[in-house]
Length: 520
Image 1 (spheres, rainbow, N blue to C red):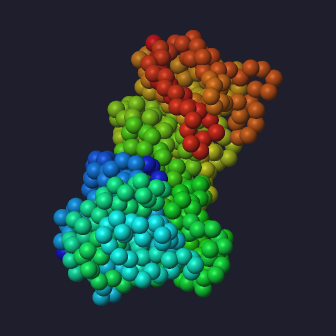
Image 2: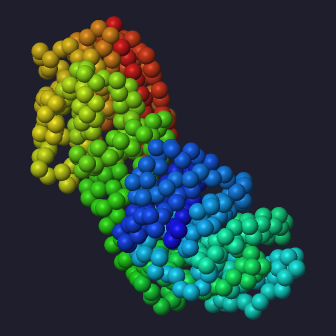
Image 3: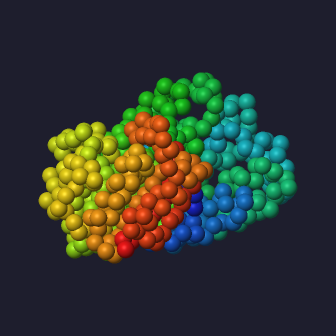
């Protein structure tokens, strides 16, 4: 077995975003998984077949489940679980890395003849006096200390390395598999001495294990694991280098990709790399595509992540983007889950705009009609700057879909439909128009027909969202509440079957109501 690159994805959604960024950037740098160069992603206390990990599989990763190393400070040592994987212990070369890395170069080129390579820590954590106490407790004497990477006035152990990137070969992974976790647990047991530095137990355990085993070591340079979470002034006294791997920690933009930090020699290559990722892997070239951070949140929050994964892939393929509006990660799969058995049925989407749902419904065999009165007509020949607003003739993309540029109240001769859906539409209509639209949908549905609605609410309330494209839709009369809407549905002949509320959605300016009703 030649080489394995491995990382760990913990339970928080951000780690999934990080892993997709890492794997996409590796591919852009020339690292493509094959029989001789494998990528393993170890997921902590999560099933390996979870559909949220499908984007990682498409990037060549094999998914393995591991247990957490422990709770509290021990959770910071979850990376050590990778050493329990037999293939890693048997591999000729191993690259162990954190997920929050952006690869600008192929790390396979970082090996030299040493069994172990890593970069010395940026700062002396823990400080030298505390380090000396820890070594005394272990019955060891400290070797001559050296300056860490970003502070010439401090001193630390020459093997005290940043945990973001380790290169192991010549049997080093197998040798460290027992000693490293053992010494890490010993360091965790010294919490009374280490205090807040207990979080660095895995790095300190690495040093103690390396001393015990006597493995050869060659330090990586700053460029091979360049951290960007330091104060800007920390970089001022350093000669510029060409970054090979950027270790960005929590320095991310709204879409979850690494952001500039205000240092020109770092920002220029970082910005160029993230621009390529947004176009080639972590989204699409359309600036209105959802960011990886919001998508990772949606994959964790939706009950049907496999549907969201399929809808995102289809939307990006056929429309050029998946909407950046984060609540679509809840709405679209919720609607799809309730209409997934409509193959062969007639389905109406009201206020469809530019949405993946008509394409998905047609793909499962439904006969789809869309209606939307928007005056802006989207040109199927140019999708580069599409948003979800506007009228799209879906028939140009799929002949199984009929699209009508008119409000639902104006539809004639189209009944009966077996099901209808509408995503964040009715609340954007004036109250009088909303009631007419609901009555017309009821008339277009057969008895027993299904209606699936999603509705934006003013946060923390049941008030219907009062704006449409930035304008107040009912400036002089009450717009209505969720209770009013439910009463309007009942008055139109519907029986409510489900009403689900989603509150405090990160990145959303609205709350959300999900409503399923059946026509009597």
